[in-house]
Length: 299
Image (cartoon, one colour):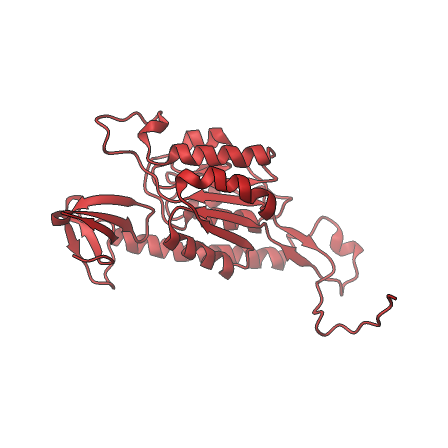
């Protein structure tokens, strides 16, 4: 067994594919390739799998992720086709040749996992959503956010990484933050963000990871959070919701049932409250300054 090997756990029926991150004596630290799960396991419980292999659960998640991305693109195309992005009456009062430009909401994404961060930033780029991402340990997110918010001035904040109900405790209480690996750190970061901007529609906060304390995250001020059913969430679930928020008009609320049903993990993985989108349009269409002919007039 070597670092970087893909493995499954015999004791869990090989349901999730992991990558070996660290090995200490007869124990390995393993990280989910599709799900935001960080775990430890005895080496003798791990079975190496080939790079092209994928568990049935992983295959379903990948198919769902592709469907969700396709749905986002279809939604945007349909909005443009129907003119749904234009304010009431703008087309009647404007010249026919006038066109518009779009300003999607800007995302600030803090992620406790560098590999998932890179996947997330790649997806934002594909969808033409302005985003700034930082790899930050969950325990440091509150202090980093305090510094970044005034300079980045995002419309949407994503706080994610790794979490889970602690298995090291003799017993756990799902009501208590002390039963979770990082939920208390997400709560602290959410409070910093909500103190910075108290209006829920001016700053959309999406927070949490696998098995996070959903109620505590919402109570701290998140618009969307994981995990109502204390289940594993897919690596890109928070990104999907952030993209939906960035591409929904400020005149509309994000369709809760639609957005949650199109996440890979579903409504047991993430939930939220009624929230307006953050996409704005402007007129006229921005011009290509490299081809614009201008007569200088300033002295």
